[in-house]
Length: 211
Image (cartoon, rainbow, N blue to C red; front, side, top):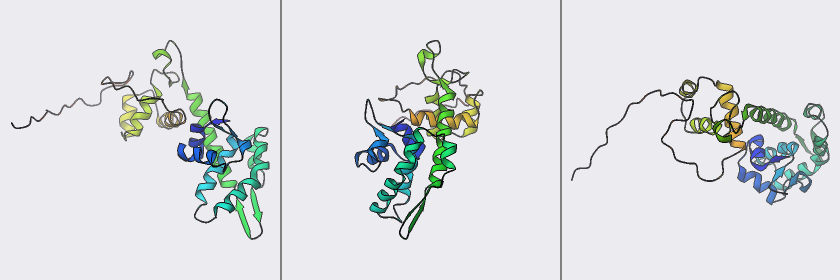
């Protein structure tokens, strides 16, 4: 089972959309858990993008019918490896309507692999920044990396600030941070993150207003 925020990353939709498919029972109840938080069966994450991506071509009833038809097959994702699921026929047929869920299954499998790699990349330790999540083997806080990416800083600048990282680590750090968002308001700080270096220190003089 994945946290709702993780399911959003794997499904490539917003957290709001994940909450919607839970609240409106678009996903079968068997694929959702509300015990101590909201969780979605990993295999069911293929149904979430299908529901939204097919909205222009299929009615809500047709999409829900397809999801209910796929339910018994996806229930097996609890016991079967993902590679085995991909070898199955994911074509759904209902009278004149034919739907192929395989592209959604493949994309979900790739995103699950990315999520697993992102989890492996990040570590915490009481001896490193007081258990702040950092990139494994470094002291680089993962949320500082994600903030730099989200701010639109060029990759070259970010990699220059943290020479121990590379493009793949940046990508996975962003996935981890999105799947595990920080709670509350971020702490404001004027200090550079530990492990970074100054690229430029050009200061712009403050313009005083005329009295």
